[in-house]
Image (cartoon, rainbow, N blue to C red; front, side, top):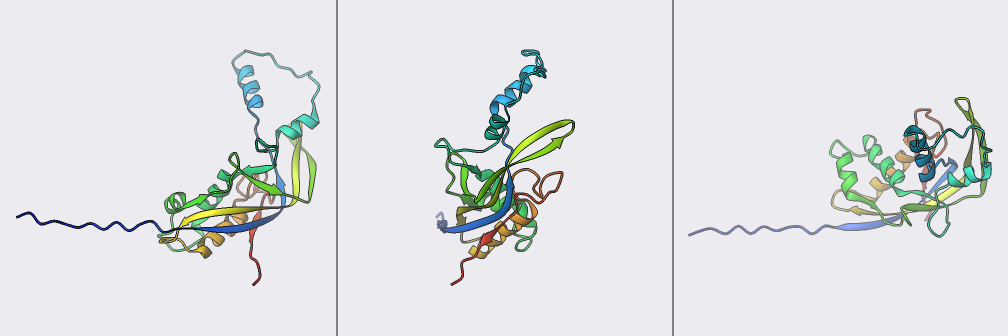
Length: 196
């Protein structure tokens, strides 16, 4: 007589948390598809160098900004998620891994892949990259909201908040953030904890 083994599969216990984040200054530098195409065309001989072409600074700045299809300014949700994954080195015990956060944490509220941001002031930063002068959009006193779905069997709400805080401090988002080679202080952020 064959014995039967009953296997019980525990259902996933997913929950959501809504967390506001706030930063001082965010430097955006989106790499537009037309710029990529222009570089490839030059490298493959499709087009010739256009060094004498007059630059349109306003257009350069606009193209560097991440925008939804409806024109709202945002930042790729993948950037926030990547920061949370990298922050696992600082949160929880040895079982709290990059693999766990990659699978157990989802950001739900992106619009066209972007998390909308609000800001008090937008300006242009003029700086040098090698021998070239670059004009990059910078946003001051910015904030956003992350709606995060997580596996409550393995991660607690405080873990999510800690991940976000460590991600904002050690990685940040955008150009000249701590994660970049230049290791700047742009794009840093922290969770906003509301007082009860």
